[in-house]
Amino acid sequence: MCFFLAQPASRFNWILLCLTGCLILSLSTSAQTPLSNPDSLKKITFDAYASDVSTADRLLALAAYYWQISPDSANDCSQKALKIGIDLKNDTLIALSRYMTANVMLVEGKNTEARQIYTAVKSVFEKYGKDKRVVQTLSNQANTYLNENKYAEARALFNEALKFAERLNDLKTRAFVLSNLGIVHDMEGDKTGAIQRYTEALKYLEQIGDTGSAARIYHNIGSLYSNLEDQQNAIQFTLKACEGYTAAGNKKSLTTAFFNLAYYYKELDSIALSEHYLNKLLKPEFPLNQAQQSTLLLLRGQVAEKRGLYDVAIPLLDSALVVAKQANSAINIHNTSATLSRIFLEKKQYATALPHARKALDLALQMGDDVSINLDQKLMAHSLAGSGQKAEAYTYLQAYEVGRDTQYTRERFQAIQNTERKYDTEKKEWLIARQQSDLREQRLWLALSLLAIMGLIAGLYWLFRSRRLKQEQLTIKSALNQLLQEQNDQLQQANINLQSKLEQTSLRPLSKEELGQITVTLSNQNKTVLALGDIFYIESKGNFVTFYTTKGVHHDWQALNHYEELLAPTTLFYRTHRSYMVNRLHVTGRRATEVLLSNGNAVAIASTPETKAAAHEWLDKWLTTGHTES
Image (cartoon, rainbow, N blue to C red; front, top):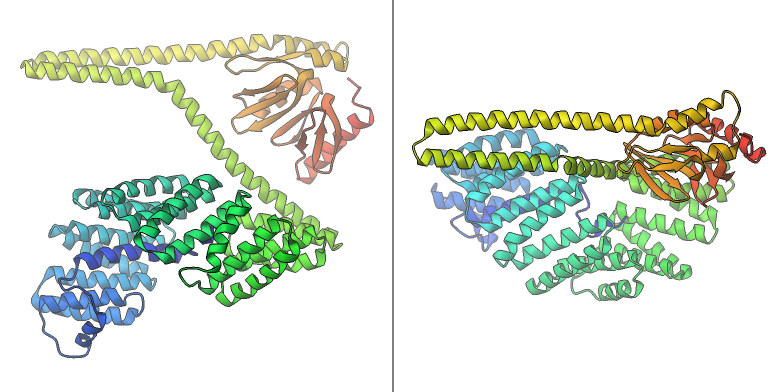
């Protein structure tokens, strides 16, 4: 919720960060005349000037100075430099002038036009072997795609830029491209990938002793870990950033880092350390802007909330809200409103909490922040319910549950994918090792044969070994298929007991004790045998299921549908949700959306009306009869 502390507030700021790096590199290599005093160069935009390379370089340096503060002036300087390049028939000057024009277009959002120019000037820079210019051009071209949320295209261009950067004996350029790739991963939501790219960039910055740039990378990595809810790592990297900022004398960034540390320690409930950094910000070494002032008030209010000092927190948060509105900081207005809503709910002042919750939800919807939307829907539901508006509260509660389930499903799906990938890797590892060993042997024999001028013999031997390898692969495949068939046969044999017992129900209904003693054999590696009476419930986890029993937890690589069909004749199990089956022998009670079990767990009931009604009908039967019927 406080990611704004360490990261730029919008996608445009990310692009601005990329462009700033490009133009810093540009200033270091483009102009032969340093831009030490921009005012001394402004006269050439009004007075007559010589049409020579030196003047063109000064114009381009001035365009680089103006690009953020006055795009029109930057474009004017670029056009004058372009005219000089055309007069001199200097391809490099023409390309540099058009490059600066494209940069201005990029800032103005003219992505297609800028892209066309970048494509043209790249070929010129490449022709004259100006690899650093190629890196800058490719990076800015990638930014045109970032403006359009086309991350794959942007990543491809940054990767191409990295190849050119690796040709240069310039570690800072490599670090620049890698940090831009980190930004792309972050914008896509791939926090782990972003950390990896930033770490690679750090390696080069530390080699050249660029403390200031390394500190910014440490700062970004800390923010990414915070987004991954790993506040311990977030703190470690941010403290390293503070060391770098202090060494470089960067008081502005050091102030921002203190905000981060205050937030991270608050999230860890280390209130004393959080207050330590907040106290530093009360007398900052660098003046705070309005957005930072509202953030400071917000954090102080949240720390007071953590301590339960609501009467102290509310005035601080009211002040934060006023300053955030003056700063037009949507994220601070949202977080302050949400915090106020939480506090008033704790004080059971529902009518006061409601407008704050509604404001927070409206802003979260505008920002498209799914996590905040979900949490704010819960605040709305509680505020409305406490205010007596039960019907509307139920609507928001349903929306909250759907959103929560969606986020949970995304997280679980990623975890399942990782598990399946690991399983496949382990299963195939020995095959890959065998093939790699054979390939290494082939290369060795081929090299010896070539050295001994035995080309023909080497060719025959290679053919022999290839055919032998193919035969071994076919043999391995056949053996694996046979193993799978044997496993399926064993599973069928193991469940004969279950099937035969169930067939007896057509002659004589079995009691619950008899049903509970029937065993089922899982298809996992250990072929676990479980008594039906020992199973509390079964949970689906993508391509596998988990059995929760009186004797522990067991996993199986099967879908829940398999066991629903297999165990249906027992009448013991019922599917209350697409992810859960419960054992009626262990049902002790129920709520509107949950089934209570004898082990103290609560299992979800699906929210769809048909499934929910059927589940409660089933529960009515077994709970009213004390689930004693067979």
